[in-house]
Image (cartoon, rainbow, N blue to C red; front, side, top):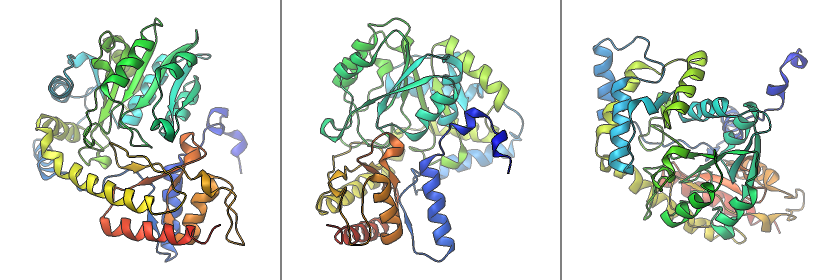
Length: 399
């Protein structure tokens, strides 16, 4: 083997824990093991028909050629219109970049902005790729942790303490992956006041779950006074529109940042798929209420899973107001044994669930929290009931 020839950057990069667990589940299924996978954050809904029809029409029109690196003008204009309609934000197409998924947007931003010694505050628990992308881009990740007692939300005092002369960027998501927590308008405004005290400090606001919120508003930090010029807003089509396989994300940012991101993208992937962008433009022009049927089903599943988790002794659960995840605190299980096996940490906990309950979930350590694990409830009620029943049955054997 020649693994010693791999770059030091690659060697220091961790594999995505969500993808790794999904692969483990697939391998067990191939061995005829009845595994329930709750590890990937992928809606189980099909892409709405009106979006698929728009893609078909684009194909029939011959939209199969290269696109401009920052995206088709018609899509960038639709994004501007969407941001004005839904978020009360005014952008021009020159401030928009369309990428092959929101993940590429985040990578473009970090590669454009970060130099060695630049620190990036990452609200923790965080989405698994934030940390690794920052490292790969040469920055230094600085996790700022908020536990279940704070509903997994960082408060201004914590942020103020973490900021120093080397801090260049803040990354967070709301609704959050992995916790489902949603920052309120008052909470966002208070964080913005801290951010504005430091010149040349920018925020990457990951809003990919914007359309999946329950009984809660999801304001963008870009809408706070004085924050649009400091904010890189990242969003995309995958979650709210059930378009994961289309690989379409976008960012809205000051023009100089958008231009830098387009420059980076031009050397890596160039423009996203033409007919997909045409369909996305149609999707964004629709009233978001056309997607409410998915949100309503997610809320139903959330309530179902919450009740079943709360019925498991020792499981600490918050009440997530968005996305489609639970992030239970399971520290009370550490040190417990079934006589032959002992749970010492979250990594061992999820291995127990996979090996004994045949339920695949993701360890909290992948998200910066060693006391928790993530469940995705983006699947049917029947599957969720079976998964929660298995988990409760297996955990009852540990004491």
